Length: 355
Image (cartoon, rainbow, N blue to C red; front, side, top):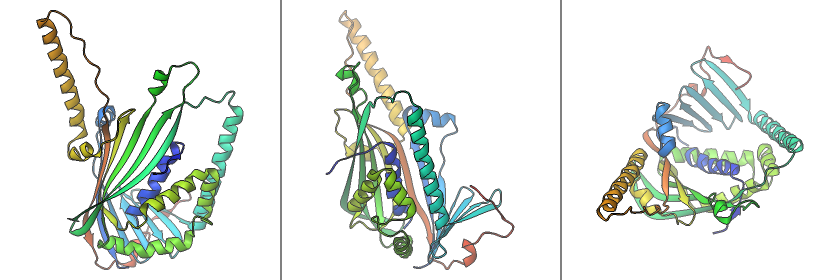
């Protein structure tokens, strides 16, 4: 496995670039996807105070080269033939339409503005903060060979793993031990069930071909991607590596679970316990760990009293911990014909100039 060294902010872009094609690849089709995010530890407690999380429902409708997605009172229509995006806010009854060329121009302007802002910040900064860590990003795929029926369709299980390892850069005023406190790896493990018989996958194949015609290859690329590659060539390396990893893997992810796992320095990631506890609430993991700690403390106090001396507690051995999961599954699918009006802005909606 080859290793790439990237800045951490690029990771989100690369992960998104991989996930979108999997969930957004010609007969008419409409299907519903239900997703839920779970959080553990301190993040989970904070989310509970904010009201917790709830299921997110998204409805995807595809007719030829048009695709509409409905989510939380908003709709987005992608028209590959008309080369335009349309966004609708149903609560305010407003919409905005933007051509691909306009979107490319806006992306280019945003990228140039970002470059100017970064340059201005560098010029104004008296002294640049020393870099305290660098990141190594690794990709891996695993086709398990397991097959099963998911949502009524034949599917194949595929794991996609992204490792983000933090490697400390020792500063002059710190010890090696202090520097290693910043070490560790974040693992994003995606457990996907991919189906090539799912109607949504078949409908999106034609759209993928049209996308390829519009965007071209990564060598020439669209204007917005060319700007992204210019901004940081490692973005292009990431897309090329992703394409290499996904080669030969086809299908729509009709069920997926993404696990975000923190792995301490010196600990090797183990996939087995992550999958074993996949249906266990993350809050239970935290409670269980607290209970185990309390039990050990109580045992230590008793044995210390029995033998007339205080028993020193051994420091806990570091171990990996899952602190976030995202579940997603297709729950309904229909291949009944869709009317053209599904992809049109409803009467009475007002056009707005900006998002």
